[in-house]
Length: 220
Image 1 (cartoon, one colour):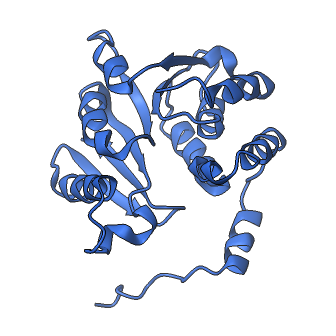
Image 2 (image 1 turned 180 degrees about the horizontal axis):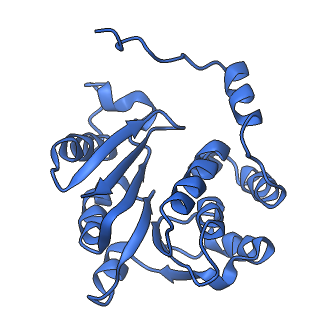
């Protein structure tokens, strides 16, 4: 197949070049990334610079006004999306604990987007199911507990307007999705979701090698 090898293998040097040649690392986001890094290994939960930029571009390109994020952590992705919204746009952020979103709240204020964001603490599936039937989303980002990705997807998809976008993070799971020896619950959940989305005729799907793998599903 002509396209079988049509990709560029990334090196640290090439990745640094890639990041340097996009509108990445805006001052407030750089400050947030630096504070998050001090948390230690858990800081890996933060999305990459170019992923945040890409998400903001997507949200702005489709004219998103109503967005939802499942898994907020310290707030990097929420800032990227909220900044792409018009003044009357709204982003619902769902997280299971207020421990990390406490940091997010400070940076939402610094970024000037706090008035566009509503944070709900508790199981995200309960938050989604409790939304009014009239709720409609234009854009969604799912980056939380992997075993519930499918449940979050179903709740969001039925509230997504036609041509709205749902993004899933970590769909390559550090390469474990193709490692048959890895049978952890998270890995199995990601594999099953990936297989399901590829055949779900309600959406149009592409999987990209951004960061740890990013799937974009457009509702038909």
